[in-house]
Image (cartoon, rainbow, N blue to C red):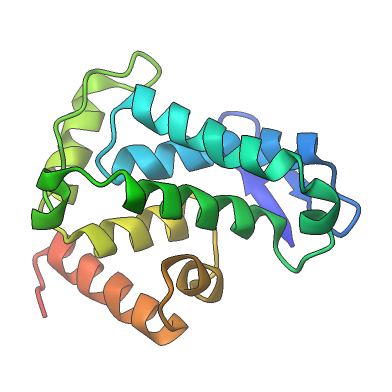
Length: 167
């Protein structure tokens, strides 16, 4: 799998069976934090959850690295941890207001959060993992425990809702 890193310096990171933990951490930690932020967590909670997911994987890395998708294992771990820590407000599908993040433009962040608040929690997760983490619908389906076609339906409905063409 080849991952295109986001940011000012576009660079490709090749992830194969010999991928080191450090390479996966460098390529996916910032993305996982962004995905968790868009899932309604604060920056601090997103960073803590991402750190915990990576720390659980480091001890078993020899086995994980031989798997089909080492990064997917990390995302799956993070979302399982997220479900265990679900706050009561999460059940309603609302996005908790996030404190300003100095690494992002505040105005753009607020507009994105306003738009994402219109979506269900599952739609937000699918969009974030698809567009920010560059995961396939198959990988997202495995992470969320649904079929790839269900992920595609969530993506389609989310795009329709965001463009005003609700289905």
